[in-house]
Image 1 (cartoon, rainbow, N blue to C red):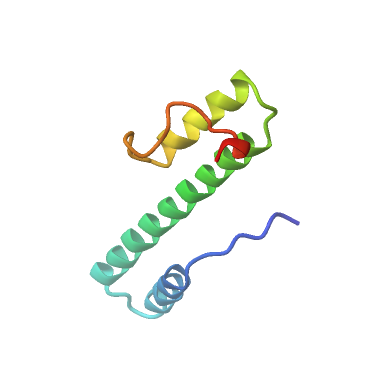
Image 2: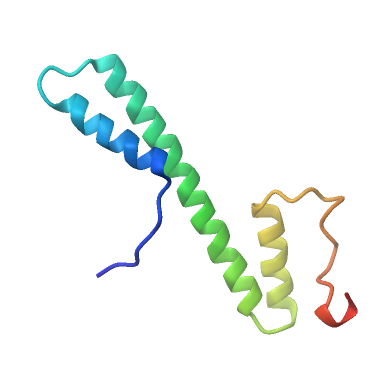
Length: 95
């Protein structure tokens, strides 16, 4: 069995609303609206999952150039403002 993933309640309710609209004679405008909402929410969820994957790879990598490259990829992916992000990793002991 695959890995479980939590989804926002709004996504689940939109999927259920879409299924209800598809029964009988569906209102195509409403179906298109629901499909657009579902697509946007799934895209956001996939982006968050990818960001979490990069963060986990960064935090579990051994210190060195590979970890620094993963840290930079995470900072860029998470869209952390450059004035907030440091140019290099600060060791916990120095905080």
